Amino acid sequence: MNDSKFWSEVSYQIMREVDQAITPLVGEKEAGETVKMGADGTPTKLIDLVAEEKVVEILEGAERPLTLVSEEIGRIDIGSGSPEVVFVVDPLDGTNNAVKNIPAYGISLAIAEVTDPDRSMTIHDIELGFVKNFATGDIYQAIRGGGASLNGQDISTSSRTDISKSSIGAYIYRADMEKVDKLCKTVRRMRILGSVAVELCYVADGTYDAFLDIRGNLRIVDVAAAKLIVEEAAGLVTDEYNQPLNGKLNVLERTSIIASGNSEVHQELIRLIGGI
Image (cartoon, rainbow, N blue to C red; front, side, top):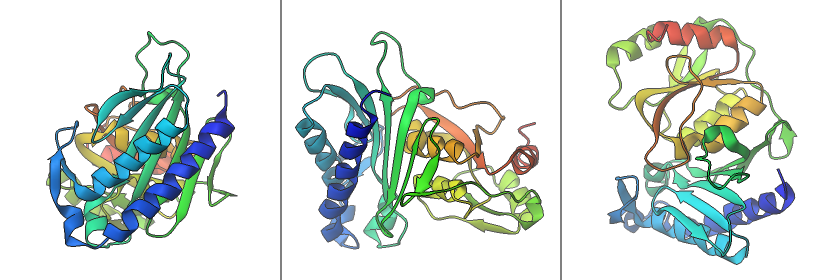
Protein backbone atom coordinates (compact mmCIF):
# COMPACT_ATOMS: atom_id res chain seq x y z
CA MET A 1 0.00 0.00 0.00
CA ASN A 2 1.05 3.62 -0.49
CA ASP A 3 2.68 5.29 2.51
CA SER A 4 2.81 2.10 4.58
CA LYS A 5 5.78 3.54 6.47
CA PHE A 6 3.82 6.65 7.44
CA TRP A 7 0.76 4.72 8.60
CA SER A 8 2.97 2.27 10.51
CA GLU A 9 4.56 5.18 12.36
CA VAL A 10 1.11 6.55 13.19
CA SER A 11 0.08 3.11 14.46
CA TYR A 12 3.12 2.86 16.71
CA GLN A 13 2.35 6.30 18.12
CA ILE A 14 -1.22 5.20 18.83
CA MET A 15 -0.09 2.01 20.57
CA ARG A 16 2.42 3.90 22.68
CA GLU A 17 0.17 6.77 23.72
CA VAL A 18 -2.96 4.70 24.34
CA ASP A 19 -0.86 2.47 26.59
CA GLN A 20 0.28 5.53 28.54
CA ALA A 21 -3.25 6.93 28.73
CA ILE A 22 -4.90 3.83 30.18
CA THR A 23 -2.11 2.67 32.51
CA PRO A 24 -3.30 4.79 35.48
CA LEU A 25 -6.76 3.20 35.17
CA VAL A 26 -5.72 -0.46 34.96
CA GLY A 27 -6.97 -2.34 38.00
CA GLU A 28 -8.97 0.64 39.26
CA LYS A 29 -12.70 0.41 40.03
CA GLU A 30 -13.50 3.63 38.16
CA ALA A 31 -12.07 2.14 34.96
CA GLY A 32 -15.06 -0.20 34.75
CA GLU A 33 -17.76 2.44 35.17
CA THR A 34 -20.19 2.54 32.24
CA VAL A 35 -20.15 5.99 30.64
CA LYS A 36 -22.34 5.42 27.56
CA MET A 37 -23.54 2.86 25.03
CA GLY A 38 -21.09 2.21 22.22
CA ALA A 39 -21.93 2.29 18.53
CA ASP A 40 -21.78 -1.51 18.52
CA GLY A 41 -24.61 -1.67 21.07
CA THR A 42 -22.48 -2.69 24.06
CA PRO A 43 -21.68 -0.59 27.17
CA THR A 44 -18.64 1.67 26.96
CA LYS A 45 -16.46 1.68 30.06
CA LEU A 46 -14.44 4.69 31.15
CA ILE A 47 -11.18 2.99 30.22
CA ASP A 48 -12.57 2.24 26.72
CA LEU A 49 -13.46 5.89 26.24
CA VAL A 50 -10.04 7.10 27.37
CA ALA A 51 -8.38 4.70 24.92
CA GLU A 52 -10.59 5.70 21.99
CA GLU A 53 -10.28 9.44 22.62
CA LYS A 54 -6.50 9.10 22.43
CA VAL A 55 -6.81 7.22 19.12
CA VAL A 56 -8.98 10.01 17.67
CA GLU A 57 -6.59 12.69 18.94
CA ILE A 58 -3.59 11.10 17.24
CA LEU A 59 -5.39 10.44 13.96
CA GLU A 60 -6.58 14.05 13.86
CA GLY A 61 -2.99 15.12 14.40
CA ALA A 62 -1.82 13.04 11.44
CA GLU A 63 -3.37 15.68 9.16
CA ARG A 64 -4.32 13.17 6.48
CA PRO A 65 -7.89 12.36 5.41
CA LEU A 66 -9.08 8.98 6.67
CA THR A 67 -12.07 7.04 7.91
CA LEU A 68 -12.01 5.63 11.43
CA VAL A 69 -14.09 2.59 12.33
CA SER A 70 -13.95 2.08 16.09
CA GLU A 71 -15.93 0.06 18.58
CA GLU A 72 -17.31 2.91 20.67
CA ILE A 73 -17.60 5.82 18.24
CA GLY A 74 -18.69 3.86 15.18
CA ARG A 75 -17.60 5.29 11.83
CA ILE A 76 -16.31 8.85 11.38
CA ASP A 77 -14.33 10.73 8.77
CA ILE A 78 -11.26 12.64 9.93
CA GLY A 79 -9.61 15.40 7.89
CA SER A 80 -10.82 17.05 4.70
CA GLY A 81 -10.95 15.43 1.31
CA SER A 82 -11.40 11.86 0.14
CA PRO A 83 -10.15 9.34 2.75
CA GLU A 84 -6.81 7.75 1.92
CA VAL A 85 -7.27 4.82 4.30
CA VAL A 86 -9.74 3.16 6.63
CA PHE A 87 -8.45 2.61 10.17
CA VAL A 88 -10.29 -0.25 11.91
CA VAL A 89 -9.59 -0.02 15.62
CA ASP A 90 -10.50 -1.81 18.81
CA PRO A 91 -8.92 0.67 21.26
CA LEU A 92 -9.05 -1.80 24.14
CA ASP A 93 -9.54 -5.49 23.51
CA GLY A 94 -10.09 -7.31 26.81
CA THR A 95 -11.64 -4.44 28.75
CA ASN A 96 -12.70 -6.58 31.70
CA ASN A 97 -9.18 -7.96 32.00
CA ALA A 98 -7.78 -4.43 32.12
CA VAL A 99 -10.29 -3.40 34.78
CA LYS A 100 -9.29 -6.37 36.93
CA ASN A 101 -5.57 -6.15 36.01
CA ILE A 102 -5.54 -9.58 34.40
CA PRO A 103 -2.55 -9.49 31.99
CA ALA A 104 -4.31 -10.07 28.67
CA TYR A 105 -5.59 -6.84 27.15
CA GLY A 106 -4.44 -4.69 24.29
CA ILE A 107 -5.20 -2.72 21.15
CA SER A 108 -5.97 -3.81 17.60
CA LEU A 109 -5.22 -1.58 14.59
CA ALA A 110 -6.00 -2.59 11.00
CA ILE A 111 -5.50 -0.39 7.95
CA ALA A 112 -6.96 -0.66 4.46
CA GLU A 113 -6.08 1.64 1.58
CA VAL A 114 -9.04 3.31 -0.16
CA THR A 115 -8.68 2.82 -3.91
CA ASP A 116 -12.35 3.24 -4.83
CA PRO A 117 -14.41 5.53 -2.56
CA ASP A 118 -17.65 4.06 -3.90
CA ARG A 119 -16.80 0.45 -3.06
CA SER A 120 -17.85 -1.06 0.26
CA MET A 121 -14.66 -2.32 1.89
CA THR A 122 -14.34 -5.66 3.68
CA ILE A 123 -11.87 -7.41 5.94
CA HIS A 124 -10.17 -8.74 2.77
CA ASP A 125 -8.93 -5.20 2.09
CA ILE A 126 -6.81 -4.97 5.25
CA GLU A 127 -3.14 -4.50 4.33
CA LEU A 128 -1.51 -3.56 7.65
CA GLY A 129 -2.26 -5.04 11.05
CA PHE A 130 -0.96 -4.31 14.55
CA VAL A 131 -1.85 -5.82 17.93
CA LYS A 132 -0.17 -4.77 21.17
CA ASN A 133 -0.65 -6.67 24.41
CA PHE A 134 -0.45 -3.75 26.84
CA ALA A 135 0.13 -6.08 29.78
CA THR A 136 3.35 -7.53 28.33
CA GLY A 137 4.44 -4.83 25.87
CA ASP A 138 4.50 -7.36 23.02
CA ILE A 139 3.74 -5.97 19.56
CA TYR A 140 2.55 -8.18 16.71
CA GLN A 141 2.40 -6.78 13.20
CA ALA A 142 1.91 -7.83 9.61
CA ILE A 143 1.90 -6.33 6.15
CA ARG A 144 0.07 -8.13 3.36
CA GLY A 145 2.61 -10.18 1.43
CA GLY A 146 5.41 -9.28 3.84
CA GLY A 147 5.01 -11.77 6.68
CA ALA A 148 4.28 -11.32 10.37
CA SER A 149 6.48 -10.48 13.34
CA LEU A 150 6.55 -10.26 17.12
CA ASN A 151 8.70 -7.45 18.50
CA GLY A 152 10.50 -7.29 15.16
CA GLN A 153 11.24 -11.02 14.87
CA ASP A 154 9.57 -13.18 12.21
CA ILE A 155 6.95 -15.60 13.49
CA SER A 156 5.11 -18.62 12.12
CA THR A 157 2.26 -20.80 13.27
CA SER A 158 2.40 -24.21 14.92
CA SER A 159 3.17 -27.26 12.78
CA ARG A 160 1.49 -29.68 15.21
CA THR A 161 -1.06 -31.82 13.34
CA ASP A 162 -2.29 -34.15 16.10
CA ILE A 163 -5.31 -32.43 17.60
CA SER A 164 -5.22 -34.66 20.67
CA LYS A 165 -1.93 -32.98 21.58
CA SER A 166 -3.05 -29.47 20.70
CA SER A 167 -3.49 -26.42 22.90
CA ILE A 168 -6.26 -24.14 21.74
CA GLY A 169 -7.79 -20.88 22.85
CA ALA A 170 -11.53 -20.34 22.78
CA TYR A 171 -14.26 -17.87 23.57
CA ILE A 172 -17.19 -19.97 24.71
CA TYR A 173 -19.50 -17.58 26.58
CA ARG A 174 -23.02 -18.41 25.36
CA ALA A 175 -21.62 -20.91 22.87
CA ASP A 176 -23.18 -24.27 21.98
CA MET A 177 -21.91 -26.31 24.93
CA GLU A 178 -22.41 -29.62 23.13
CA LYS A 179 -19.83 -28.51 20.56
CA VAL A 180 -17.54 -27.18 23.29
CA ASP A 181 -17.78 -30.48 25.16
CA LYS A 182 -16.54 -32.38 22.09
CA LEU A 183 -13.57 -30.04 21.86
CA CYS A 184 -12.69 -30.38 25.53
CA LYS A 185 -12.73 -34.17 25.24
CA THR A 186 -10.48 -34.15 22.18
CA VAL A 187 -7.80 -31.49 22.56
CA ARG A 188 -5.08 -31.61 25.17
CA ARG A 189 -5.50 -28.11 26.58
CA MET A 190 -8.01 -25.28 26.27
CA ARG A 191 -7.37 -21.70 27.37
CA ILE A 192 -9.91 -18.90 27.81
CA LEU A 193 -8.22 -15.52 28.29
CA GLY A 194 -10.91 -13.07 27.18
CA SER A 195 -8.89 -11.08 24.63
CA VAL A 196 -9.60 -12.28 21.11
CA ALA A 197 -7.02 -10.14 19.31
CA VAL A 198 -4.22 -11.22 21.66
CA GLU A 199 -5.25 -14.87 21.52
CA LEU A 200 -5.36 -14.90 17.73
CA CYS A 201 -1.80 -13.58 17.79
CA TYR A 202 -0.91 -16.54 20.00
CA VAL A 203 -1.93 -18.69 17.03
CA ALA A 204 0.31 -16.59 14.78
CA ASP A 205 3.41 -17.20 16.92
CA GLY A 206 2.66 -20.86 17.68
CA THR A 207 1.78 -20.40 21.36
CA TYR A 208 -1.66 -21.77 20.54
CA ASP A 209 -2.25 -24.42 17.92
CA ALA A 210 -5.65 -22.87 17.21
CA PHE A 211 -8.28 -20.43 18.42
CA LEU A 212 -12.01 -20.44 17.88
CA ASP A 213 -15.14 -18.45 18.64
CA ILE A 214 -18.23 -20.22 17.32
CA ARG A 215 -20.97 -18.01 18.77
CA GLY A 216 -21.46 -16.16 15.47
CA ASN A 217 -21.35 -12.88 17.40
CA LEU A 218 -17.68 -11.89 17.10
CA ARG A 219 -17.15 -8.34 15.83
CA ILE A 220 -15.17 -7.92 12.61
CA VAL A 221 -13.52 -4.92 14.30
CA ASP A 222 -12.01 -7.25 16.93
CA VAL A 223 -10.27 -9.53 14.42
CA ALA A 224 -9.44 -7.28 11.44
CA ALA A 225 -5.77 -6.91 12.39
CA ALA A 226 -5.17 -10.33 13.93
CA LYS A 227 -6.65 -12.16 10.93
CA LEU A 228 -3.96 -10.66 8.71
CA ILE A 229 -1.25 -11.42 11.28
CA VAL A 230 -2.26 -15.10 11.46
CA GLU A 231 -2.43 -15.45 7.68
CA GLU A 232 0.93 -13.74 7.15
CA ALA A 233 2.40 -16.18 9.69
CA ALA A 234 1.23 -19.01 7.37
CA GLY A 235 -1.90 -19.82 9.37
CA LEU A 236 -5.51 -20.38 8.28
CA VAL A 237 -8.55 -18.27 9.18
CA THR A 238 -12.17 -19.15 8.29
CA ASP A 239 -15.59 -19.11 9.88
CA GLU A 240 -16.95 -22.25 11.53
CA TYR A 241 -18.22 -23.51 8.14
CA ASN A 242 -14.77 -23.29 6.57
CA GLN A 243 -15.72 -20.20 4.57
CA PRO A 244 -13.49 -17.10 4.23
CA LEU A 245 -14.34 -14.16 6.47
CA ASN A 246 -15.94 -11.49 4.30
CA GLY A 247 -17.45 -9.00 6.76
CA LYS A 248 -17.68 -5.33 5.92
CA LEU A 249 -15.57 -2.84 7.86
CA ASN A 250 -18.16 -1.61 10.34
CA VAL A 251 -18.91 -2.16 14.02
CA LEU A 252 -22.12 -4.12 13.42
CA GLU A 253 -20.63 -6.94 11.33
CA ARG A 254 -20.48 -10.25 13.21
CA THR A 255 -18.86 -13.60 12.45
CA SER A 256 -17.60 -16.86 13.87
CA ILE A 257 -13.91 -17.67 13.55
CA ILE A 258 -11.50 -20.56 13.53
CA ALA A 259 -7.79 -19.80 13.25
CA SER A 260 -5.17 -22.53 13.17
CA GLY A 261 -1.58 -23.27 12.31
CA ASN A 262 -2.22 -25.82 9.58
CA SER A 263 -4.93 -27.47 7.52
CA GLU A 264 -4.94 -30.78 9.43
CA VAL A 265 -5.87 -29.19 12.75
CA HIS A 266 -8.22 -26.75 11.02
CA GLN A 267 -10.25 -29.42 9.28
CA GLU A 268 -10.47 -31.56 12.40
CA LEU A 269 -11.74 -28.63 14.47
CA ILE A 270 -14.41 -27.86 11.91
CA ARG A 271 -15.43 -31.52 11.83
CA LEU A 272 -15.70 -31.65 15.62
CA ILE A 273 -18.04 -28.70 15.82
CA GLY A 274 -20.17 -29.92 12.91
CA GLY A 275 -19.15 -27.33 10.34
CA ILE A 276 -18.48 -30.02 7.72
